[in-house]
Length: 125
Image (cartoon, rainbow, N blue to C red; front, top):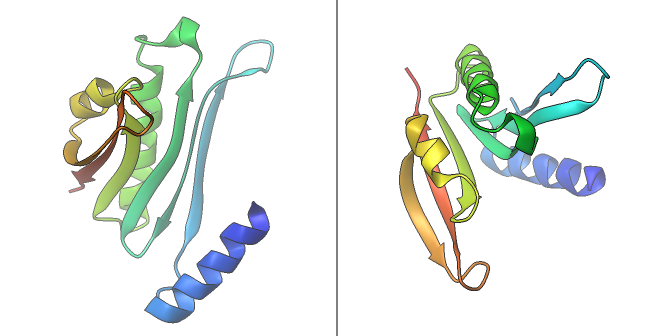
């Protein structure tokens, strides 16, 4: 996976002329040093993309996911990003992202079957 990401980044950078890509990672650990929440994404070309956000089920609804998203937004702004984009599924967290100020851009029906995948965007100050 690392090889694939690096190869695609090289191609995309050479083709677009944009070479400012940086990974974005954050995690929260409990007292036993086990990861209980994490976020993974990257910033490139004034856009931040969140690939994955996960919060342990015992902590959902306690503000942990919101704290990770706020940290990601602050980091994205610090890196000169104008927007954050992400995908989620209808059974995952669309309401969570909408509460965070994200706007629905494009649903992909029946992905997976019986559900939809949804693309979101949030413009940053």
